[in-house]
Length: 162
Image (cartoon, rainbow, N blue to C red; front, side, top):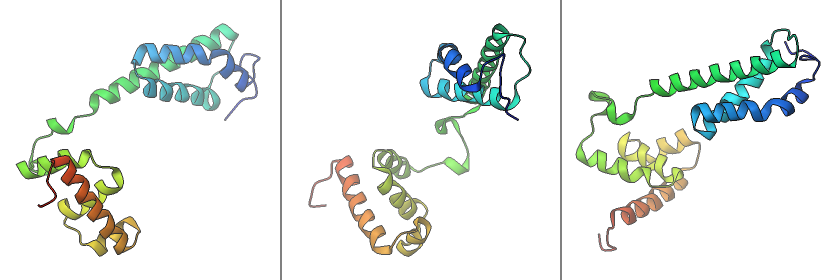
């Protein structure tokens, strides 16, 4: 439950006064802006919802920095738990050379074409099924497939006669 005061300061005053210190600590620790911002937000979220009583502003600042550092450690642990797809072995991700080649190309296509092409070629859905999955009309799916194929053709350097 949120409190009205934190070592004599309102929540917004605390954020204004210590935002730079907390964000800098996170950036220095993580060397990644987006992750640092996530940890910054989590720190102030915890202050708002779970903070102890603070003896004074020094205690408050120390608590914020400790929480921020712990959030950064947690973020780094989570980063290390992620496994790149290239390292996953087994049947689930064993692709033929053709599939690997098309995956490389799909990554370079805009998302609106990518998902339609993926559903059509990888998952073998029909146009009407894709339309239902994406909550669109079959003609829209057909148009996206046509344009997506054209984009893939450009990526592969195909000529117009193919």
